[in-house]
Image (cartoon, rainbow, N blue to C red; front, top):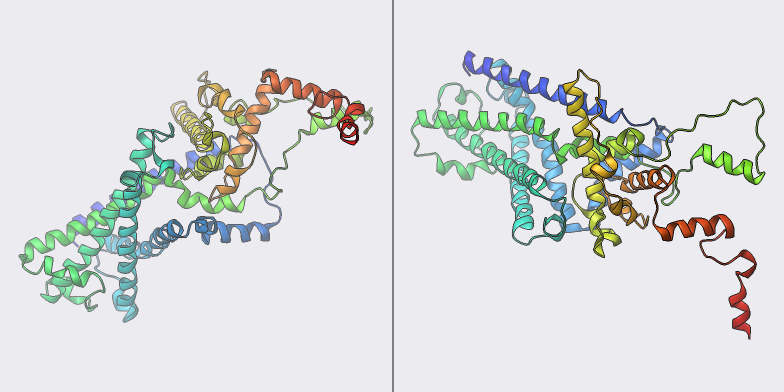
Length: 446
């Protein structure tokens, strides 16, 4: 590698690293806008959940076909990137296959494994594109789900296409490199690695090429592969593929409470207990300042709900299992998470434009992004929580938004108000008094 190529590579690597670091810092700041919540208890249980759900892909295996395909991409992404380390070091130091002399016979074995995984990733990406555009899996179609509009559809297509091109570049780079090595050209001949398992079958494509043209293609494939990976690393921070990284902390900080257990509001609980005489007021205690009930904007949600939003894979399994969505209601748990992330992104851009301080933009998560009709359609059945492959909880956001609407704005459907009144007066959602509750049994006995 010439000194000019080394300099260009170092500039590209430093630029992308700086942009990624800047982007990661902004995401951290927006997540920290959420309310504090302690999720550090039971570390062993949390680690076990992370290993099973994120590392072991447990929930993806509920559908074995899709689960195995996703596992191939996942493993391929993790392992093939080991090769990236050598490419980066070669770029910095101007070497060629730096690890080959040190690893000896292990080196060709590793490259063979990488190539087999590359073929697996390439094949699965083609299948995933076919599922979106040929077999048209329902949960990905914008005609059925309005949140899967232009950008989410384009985002998935771009990533799958880029991965295909990166794998092709990797395999053809190895093939052209093997031909140059056989011809004893320059430094290529110094790495005595032999042919590799998959790329040896691509060598006939290059055997009739002029040596100069072959060197040009080898350099093109090398640069395309590494620049594509660097661009992929930056692009991931702007797309749904951020779950590749956030799936691990997001599953570690999962909610350990039993599903269906809602968070009470301590201040309200205390007021109710005082009213019922269950608790006694402390005469020395200063009156607590009552904050906002529920959530109107992302600032009112917990940091974990905000991390959930950035971790969403947009796979749509939550929406496909949602009974409200299935029956034609506007609610889509996937859209709830995407809207929350869009709001966070808008706030992040606002902060960047005002020296790190958020300037009021007269928008809120509720009403400007998520409609009341959507949150009121939720049955709180927990199906979305159960289906999510990375333990995201859309229901927590829905309940907080709904709580704000009912308790702060006193706006609830008439049927809900009647139910609330019955619960308060009759200790049951029905309109009958407690004394008449078993009248139906008397009629059965007659």
